[in-house]
Length: 133
DNA sequence: CGCGTGACTTGTA
DNA sequence: TTACAAGCCACGC
Image (cartoon, rainbow, N blue to C red; front, top):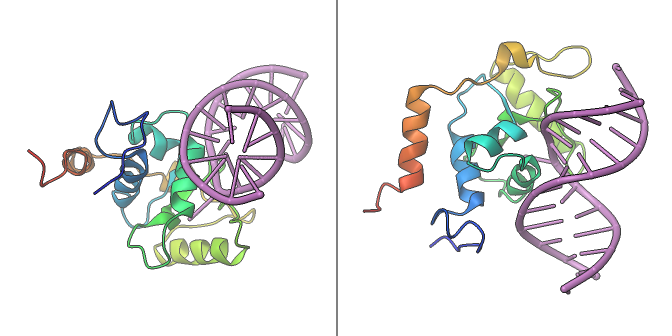
């Protein structure tokens, strides 16, 4: 059972943390999105930092495609754990066909994820909770 | 309860 | 192009 965090409880029964993960799960293979974008789609505008915090809390065994989330400059953000994680992120993206330039940045104009109607349906379903009245 | 820190963004210079 | 400040939120001390 998701624990509510007060401020969002009045607006949704699903925590901001889970809504963020729902959005990230909708990012298709070979595409990337930004922290700010995820926050906005999760109904948390201007809270990109919260997205980074949510992803940092993911277990190593997660199925959430966290590697498809980059910063606004198209660069892979360093993790507090070290540079290994960012390297893994880059390798995973390249394996999906995402191209990095000489500066180590993704071309967001080419690889940015665009939300489709199917994505919105999927998000809405996740938001309602498939087992909720 | 205050303060610093952090996988961020945006605006300004 | 880079550098700095302000804004936002959760967490540990």
